[in-house]
Length: 427
Image (cartoon, rainbow, N blue to C red; front, side, top):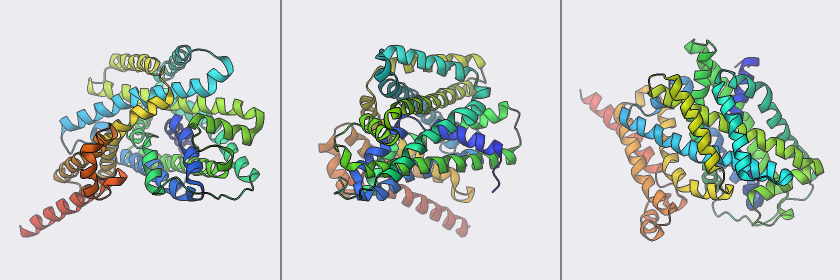
């Protein structure tokens, strides 16, 4: 597999659109709480925040359509509803969260300005980038992403080589792999894969790249570049959290821990570096989300450029309004939405990766329906209905780990294919 300049530009652009607020804050606290089990937590986190999103990019390379194509085998109506839900979640939660994180970690400590001013200026810049989307890949890939990667890598490397204290302690996680996997939901990377993957495809077409096979190879290679970058950063930040576990209380907030790590690794200049990093990482993610949402609305409204512009403007206004909330509150509010939409997204990614031979329309319908049904108890539990859902989840395999949907979905995939195989043989 050969990698050229174009591959790395597209790969870094993908990396930057994935790497946002949650990607910075979540890993260190996992490592801090996991201590010597950091590698198990990292494994779970990487599965949901790197491996599955990477499969999502591969699925886009195979389909080279829009996000509507991910669920079209279930039904056009379901596909439309699914896309609308995903885009509403994306533009209402992770996009504003990037502005909130930028304010709390990069603006307020230095300037003491209001969250309203920060989010207004922030989304004004997002608006400029989104309205000039033909330049998004080049700007993100050539300039912003390498800076992000270098700054985070500096924190990781200095931390690894500056601490000689052995990693010893009692992990707070009973099931570290599952804890890491569920925490990976909060990165929104699987949802990000189906959203920003379409941004890359449309950006390539705007640049005049219409060769299906060439674009397929480019998207796959750029996905590998982005995946390797995410793997290095996630594993490194989790490991750093474990390395410095004795320096912080386990109750420390995510933002305080991240600030503390930068200070201990980069010294007094660490805050400046971290501010640049947070601002860039959050900004590139917001651009990807707003652009992807506007592309979707433009597509379902007969390629209307006016619809694209209006959606970008509305998305930025919503970002300003929602960006006023505390970042930890936004993370808390996101849990129920993620517990419902993430399993469906994961299953759709898996189904779109598998061979056409095993993913007929009937298979899609059966597997997705079962996934939705068995995701409901986890969703209800996440909104506080424990008394009703706990007896159900105790019975279901993996129910106590918030993965009640997993085995039924895989079993349905096997059984439905077996039924179709036997039906074909009988003929």
